[in-house]
Length: 75
Image (cartoon, rainbow, N blue to C red; front, side, top):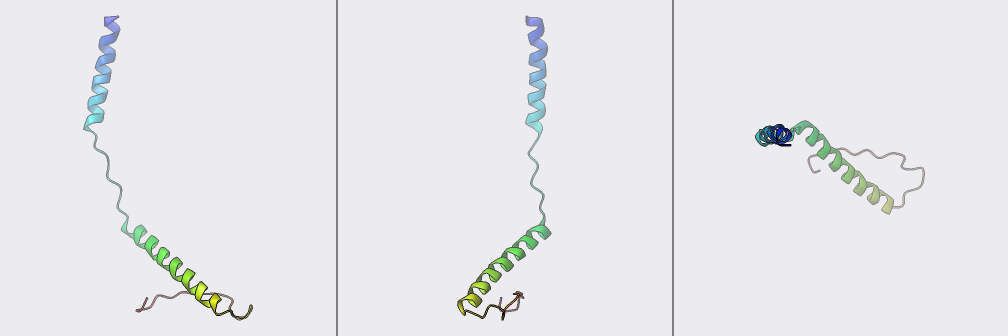
């Protein structure tokens, strides 16, 4: 039994050393993807508020077909 135990313990020890040395990799930083996501979120929020504002005015059914949001200096 001790003959089997020594190799098993040796393998476990070496494996634990190899895992102990590894540091977790930092998450990749993707500024372009983050900026695009934030811009989409801003547009979604603006479109949501604009749609509510137009619907509150009770336009005729066919008078408004599409909404387009454009970012200006004021927002």
